[in-house]
Image (cartoon, rainbow, N blue to C red; front, top):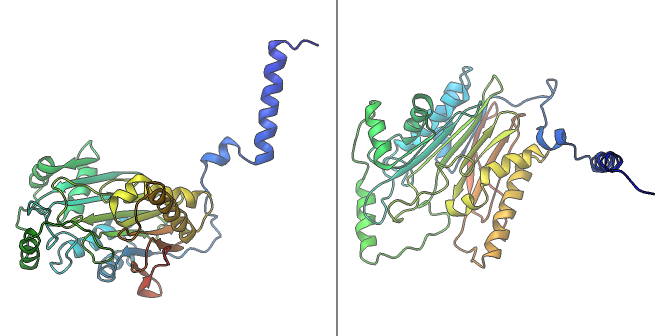
Amino acid sequence: MKTNRKTFIKKTALAGILMLGNNNLTHANILQPKVLKTDEPTNKPIVLSTWKFGIKANESAWLILNKGGRALDAVEAGINITEADPEERSVGYGGRPDRDGRITLDACIMDEIFNIGSVACLEHIMHPVSVARAVMEKTPHVMLVGVGALQFALSQGFVKQNLMVEKSEKEYKQWLLKTAYHPKVNIENHDTIGMIALDAAGNLSGACSTSGMAFKMHGRVGDSPIIGAGLYVDNEVGAATATGHGEEVIRVAGCHLVVEYMRMGKSPEEACIAAVERIVSIIKLRKKSMDEIQVGFIALNKKGEYGSFCVQQGFNYAVYDGNGNKLIDAKFYKK
């Protein structure tokens, strides 16, 4: 029996609907995040940040969160603390220079309604995360780089200054004797202050800041200022930030990946594990050694649940909530 065109279309459409129904893959299910029920308990406010220096950064953020302040203000204030500390050699003032002896900084920030701002390869400004916020709030753009970022910062009242401290200058002169470039895991020559927070109103925000890899090629930019790589916030789902070798994070749009795993129903820790496993699989696909590669993620969902995971042992992160401020050693992939 012949099937006319109209009958064929109807049968095909019905088969498609049945197939979607059997596999529970409706258009709505694919696109819609899990929405937190109002009767579910929520751990808020809460702030997470990367590495040991996150303890001090969290204290500044908590002063804002504990008074009912906005998560966006909290993460900026927290990161400003690390940026201004000359003893923290991978962020802001005191950061290590590139191979040309220039300190270039990267940062980004993201709020609860997808407003974003970013700067990359910015010189002479102590607080790149605050410049990133100014980009977000005062320009039609989301990212400024290099000389343009500096010009904008100066136009907004930021002060140009020398960011090189004595220790960094001494290390750079020693490096020039051999000019070898061998990034090492967990020695904080390539690390980032990343911070994510959930405020009392139930809104998420995040930010990160870094001076990047020590003795990098001039102009090198890692994941830290790239929304979706070094940071991502979706106020219906959760937030994530990353640290470590930015090139590996960029390959998988790491923090967006973590948030999407949480959208699928994974816990923050499970989402971080899945993202690290994706990175490891790509390292193996590219036949690269994992011995000198470290990537760590921290994640926070709308319930105030948090988690982390990293490629290798040695990464830690700080958490400040109603139970106080503590440092946690992250679980890791490589045994």
